[in-house]
Length: 161
Image (cartoon, rainbow, N blue to C red; front, side):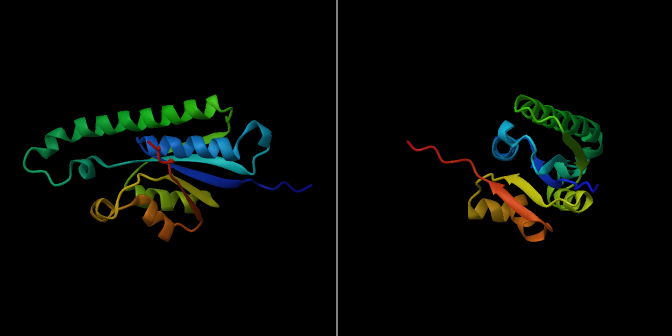
C-alpha cells in the first residue's frame, strides 16, 4: 500500500490585518469542514526582522537599544503566532506547523518554500500603491517572481461606501 503525502500550503504571516485576512480566507476555502480531507498540509511562517534591520541606520548608542528591540520583536512574533493558532483552532484546523524565522521576509518565505517543498505560498496584500511599493518593496511581488511554487496573493475586498 502506498501513501501519498499531502502538498504543502505555506502561509506567510506578519502583524497586519491583511495577513490575518489571507489566513482566514484560505482556511475558509481550502480547510472547511466539508473538505475534511484537505489536499494540503498547512505551514505558517512568520519572518522576524533582525534587531539591526529594525533599527536601520542608527547612530551612536544603537547597541544599547538592541536588547529592547529584540525583546519587542520576539513579543510581536509570539503574538502573531498565537493569533494564527487561535484562528486555526476556531476554524477546526489542528494539523498546523508553525515557524518563526529571523530574517528579511522575502528571503525567509522563499527559503521556507524550498525547505518544505511547498506547492503554494499564500500572502496577504497590503494594497500599497506604486510609489509606496517602490520605496518599501513588496514582499508579495518579490515572492511572486522568486518563489518556486504557485503564489496566491489574497486581497481584502474594498468596502463600498
